[in-house]
Image 1 (cartoon, rainbow, N blue to C red):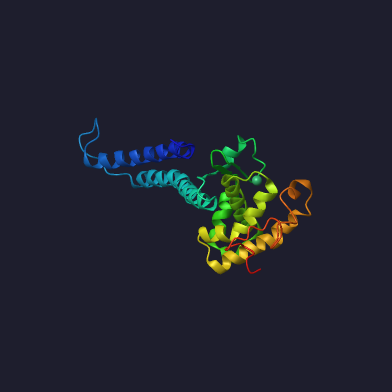
Image 2: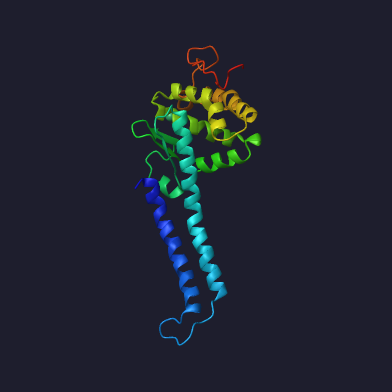
Length: 230
Ligand SMILES: [Zn+2]
């Protein structure tokens, strides 16, 4: 069982427990419960409550699990088929993560990508309205592509970030963003968020290089590069 599956199991079990309560209530209205002479009517408020609780306990983990699978497949494609497994951390997971202050991290040996909160939530809202992406949402796209580049095999942060800058257009399209908007979002990331890294001191500067520009040393000349025809 993968760690992602292990994380959703308690919630699924809790959901099944509530479903069992619902089943027991309905059964008692058909077959007389032990110690009763005849079936008793269903308590509708009770039935509604346990069904709502069943849905509430199953939905968030299932939704996250589904999004993680979706992101894992897209990260694998971005990493030139090095297998990626994306884990969207919850606040609870993040407390126990020694690297909780980073937006995310990736292990190229295992392919595991951890996205710290609120990264996955921000990325999900970006995908809902990419045409009016906020700076935070563009940042979450860049983070996702960046960690995918680590899984692809790059460890140097400046090279990793530059590879991501050139692939943010591809990444956005893979995630389902329409072509024209994907291009604009990826260029905005390069022109605004990436350029700002050069001015923000050592921690940010290690992610930045002036050679990360069209025609410069780090240009991979990808046919679908963010800055192709720029
Ligand atoms: Zn990195």
